[in-house]
Amino acid sequence: MSDVLDLAAVTVTRGTKVLLDAVDWQVEDGERWVVLGPNGAGKSTLLSIAAARLHPTRGRVSVLGERLGQVDVFELRPRIGLASSALAQHVPAGEVVRDVVVTAAYGVTGRWVESYDDADLARAEELLGLMGVGALATRRYGTLSDGERKRVQVARALMTDPELLLLDEPAGGLDLGGREDLLRRLTALAADPVAPTTVLVTHHVEEIPVGVTHALLLREGRVVAGGPVAEVLTSDLLSTTFGLALEVGTEAGRWTARALR
Ligand SMILES: Nc1ncnc2c1ncn2[C@@H]1O[C@H](COP(=O)(O)OP(=O)(O)OP(=O)(O)O)[C@@H](O)[C@H]1O
Image 1: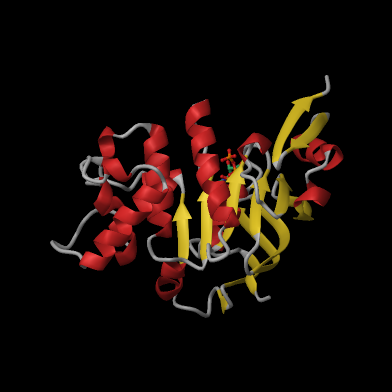
Image 2: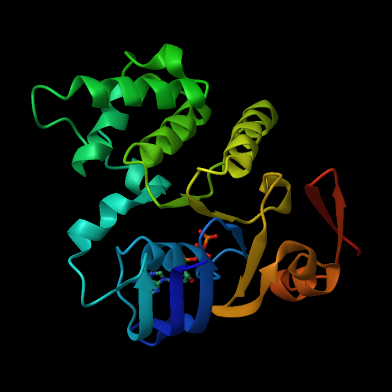
């Protein structure tokens, strides 16, 4: 097993604000991680570092065996699939859905060349089908519902056949049916032995797909706990992470949490 992510004493500061504080984290090949924490805990900042889109203020980061600061990030980024609402905001509303996916192969949002390889277009359509939105391939991205857009974003993130897949709140803002449908697809992905190593960020334990193997808990930029899910997603550790007394339950691989008072 090799390290897909290796962060040592990673600190990110902006002015006097500490976004991440001496974070140590290792992710190995084939693992499926969830990163949980309250608003402002530093989850998206951590994901930006894992995506090679942000450099730490201090500390050492290796992504897919390449040390940030010593590697050309433009060569590294195609090896990483990223789905986040921040990235999705750059997608032009008039873009055809299939092109939203295929442009990932070219490292851009917004179509900028007139023709794509047939194999790339076929792959984009296959991934849209995998995410249950194959019928929307020729629609304009701006006409899709939030749930449909989320699924297109995951398809786009998979387009380059990445070694590392990073999903920032993929189920955020979805209705119950949309969330459950997306989770079913992410569960299938987690179970696929050739699917990439995955890190999924969320605020809600209900949004953790079945098959997640590890969890990292963040609070105020610090790691509360990290390791195998069964050891980390406990009532005590989640209560510390969210700052309120919680009772955590699990059934058939899914998780629930409720406040005790
Ligand atoms: N440029 C900046 N200057 C100052 N503070 C910042 C800056 N960027 C982010 N922050 C702060 O850093 C903290 C961590 O932000 P981050 O987006 O990583 O948290 P998060 O856990 O993803 O939050 P959420 O769950 O709300 O999306 C937040 O308090 C945010 O306001």
